[in-house]
Length: 354
View 1 (tube, one colour):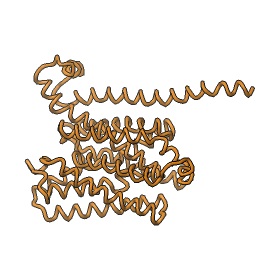
View 2: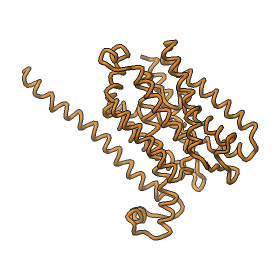
View 3: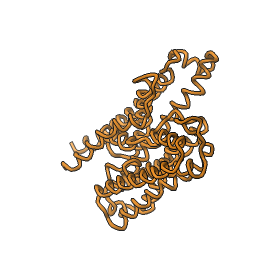
View 4: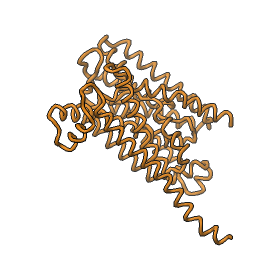
């Protein structure tokens, strides 16, 4: 009996792996299908057949202009931004051992938004075309300031974790306080700006995927891709951290280094995305928790799964915002907040019940 049990382990493990892989693959396929739908959704009267034909280089000229100049940058930016925010949330939850950690709840997104607003209003990195939009002329300066703002929040969180040994609940509260602080400073900047820039920055902070260009998409894609490679390279370290700091150290993990670089990469992703598309909350909280319920906490699978579900959620939210009261387009940040707030409360109450 013992021998048959041992022989059955590989087969059971293969089923275990195949199930996780299948969930990730199906989510990926669903994202592709939704991308095609999102590309033809709108008032231009483009069918799915027209979209596929245009993507293959055989469509009409007017369809080519609409799809390649307007729709595709928006769809791909939603997917890339969702991937980045979700995987950043997945990693911060692991390295801080806090299920409520994410770039939004830790104040990282708000810090990045403050830095971006500072670059636009004070240092002239952006110019306005009308009262409800802002064009980023110098994306590198905006990203730099957004990154500095996000790192300010990150450093404070790391100091609290290392020096004062605060509890996970207290760290989330500290993140909420940091988010409030950065939001207050951003409002002060708006108070001293002229009316046109105030309207532009307020609209920018809502979160709008439609403002991203091919250039912005390329920058976001490079940063997210590099961060994903680093996170996957450290997937075993994150698994060890889930068992506690002492256990991880006993397994040879340099906990301080892994935590510092992990927070650095998560901040970099958040700063770049916020600089180009504004604040999009709760993707980093919702995506990882959905996939933890489906495939567990093994970061070999959780990191790619969180990435795929993050892209799917943000793309779905942006598509809903475009079509729900068309032709009015709702800001995607509002849609994701509607989705994320109940999940946040659920995770919070579930933790206290335990």
